Image 1 (cartoon, rainbow, N blue to C red):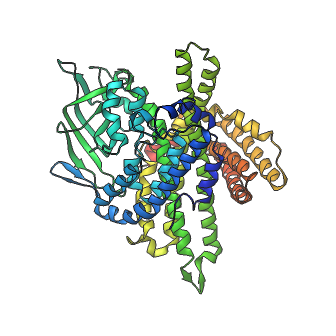
Image 2 (image 1 turned 45 degrees about the horizontal axis):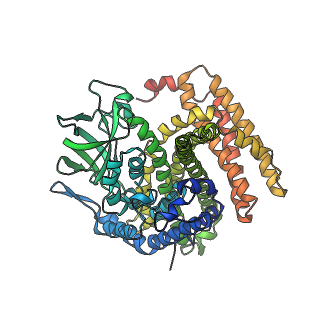
Image 3 (image 1 turned 90 degrees about the vertical axis):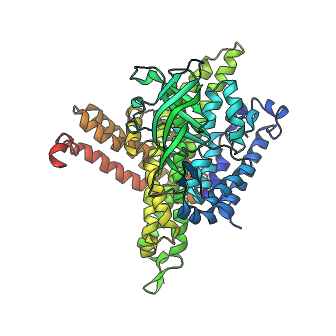
Amino acid sequence: MPNYFTENEDLLFHFERLNLRETVQILEHNYDYATQYPGAPKDFDEAIRNYRSSLELTGDLAANFIAPKAEKVDLDGAKLKNGKVNYAQETLESYGQLARAGLTGVILPHKYGGINFPATIYMMLIELVSRADASLMTLFGYQDVGEAISKFGSPEVRERFLPPYTSGEHIGSMVMTEPGAGSDLQAIQLKACQDEDGQWRLNGVKQFISNGCGDMLLVLARSEAGSKDMFGLSLFVCPGGDKVQITHVEEKTGLHGSPTCQLYFDDAPCYLVGKRRQGLMHVLYVLNHARFSVAAQALGMAEAAYREALSYTKIRRQFGKLIYDMPPVANMLIDMRVAIESCRSLLYAGAQWLDLRNNLEEQAEILKKEGQNTEAIKARFREAAKITDLLSPLTKYVVSEMAVKVCYDAQQLHGGMGYMREMAVERLARDVRITTIYEGTSQIHIGACYKSVAGDVLKDFFEENESKSYPGELKVLADKMQEMRHLFLALNALTRAHEDSKFKEAAAKESVDVYSYLYRGYLLLSEASQNQRKRHIARRFIMQSLAAAHQSLQAVKNEQFNDIGFAGIICR
């Protein structure tokens, strides 16, 4: 029987290279949790065995239970009837299987029924589930909602909301977007106020909410009357119910199994999560996780599309031979494989930084309570936070854009059949399109990256890798990487020195792209020193990226973006 984990050579390679020892030790409180909670690991080796077991179980469920139902989920979708959303029966069955396997509280604490896994392992689980059915990810992959309540909620709020969430009884949702507030969360107008008994209540409309029919709604609302800035926002959890009306479920291009709802809050009771007026700051913590989750979702879809294309090209004959043996087709397949593996390297490197950042912060708090010196650990936390703040938007942007191209290329390799509903790539091409849009568009994330890129946040990483000795053919690739580094520095200097702010904003994409090539290139170079197959991946990626970096520098040198101010004349 197939297994999406054990059959994925590259995913196994990354799992076996994970550097999570410090993260897990902090997560498990020096493994003291093993004396308090059944199933908590006694040491790091047992933790790794638990992670592998869960990944193998999920890989089995994804391949043999969830994937066969994906076509029916897409056809039936989620429907609104008499004010209630009904999921496709197959969606409920698949989510039920994940719940019974104990996987619906993966990143939540043992205390509330979770299994306390690192975010990196959670992202791997999301990749597996999304390869099988991307729409199911929005049920399974919104555990960040529970994590936010676990981190910022009061003990009473945690006790009320987390146990039914970790058991799979309840489904969560992040409720941020409004008709006039998409990525600009400071524009949120949904009102939160306290009644005479001190109960918080919500009034207003939210739009484009994935799983807005859920039982645990994490809502960003304006709690300070008359305020207009970010400090007028607070974060709340709302249990839904009769006071939250689902007024519309969107008819979407893809992800039909995931309902996208418009919500009307009519004096709906809710509970404060975290500090009042700090809602946006709490949400930014959640969004760091959510960006990686969407990247993992996109990666799972890209892997599925590549596998479909590979299988199809090995049976489809044209002009008397398999199209797999035609060089233009083989070239596309290689490009797809290289793109997927370079992005997998980016995703799991970034996820490990996210884990380190989160757990160093927790460790600093523990040491502070114990009266110990926290200066050293706070310095490490600041460094991890700085790198995570870059890699979170960068990963979401790069991986989602890659996935769209891979899914479209997979559809292309199917020829006319790829346009037919009976083929899985047709669904994947529809489902993947949202990944460059929700949780912030690619353009938003380029802007979010640019300050860190311009400041060369990864400078130490690049210099460390430049100083390494590489044997044989890898030395040639290392030289190409140094050439690319010089191209970036020239590009960055030119862009930063430009006097036209509009030019700078338009040219930011070039700098961000080249920076991502550098980071992924060095990750692949490191992997290639340990794995012969990875040398082929690294070579093609680095050579392609070097050519693209030359092109980016030339675009800025040629003042390609100096006509941005004439958009009103050109675009009409």
